[in-house]
Amino acid sequence: MTFAAMDLDKAKLDPDSVFHAPKDVLGAPGLSPEEKKSILVRWEADLEALLRATEEGMPPADQRRSPAELLRAAHEAMQSLDSDASSARCCC
Image (cartoon, rainbow, N blue to C red; front, side, top):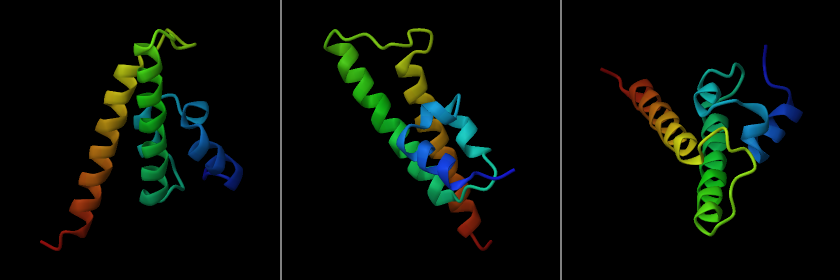
């Protein structure tokens, strides 16, 4: 199963509406590393904005999931993607 163009556009605009967790982006079939990175970068930006809003007294709508934990997971997924890309370039 691959991502349809509409699903990809939706994922790039609102990753949380398509994926349950950032690690799910890594395992998504049919996405290039660049598409995965784009989705994770957007998710990180969204979570950072949510954390700023929370610090200013505006609690998140979904209080079951911690924005800080999701941001950490997004950073870990990005690092994993970057390390996979590094090892793929290695010609050892």
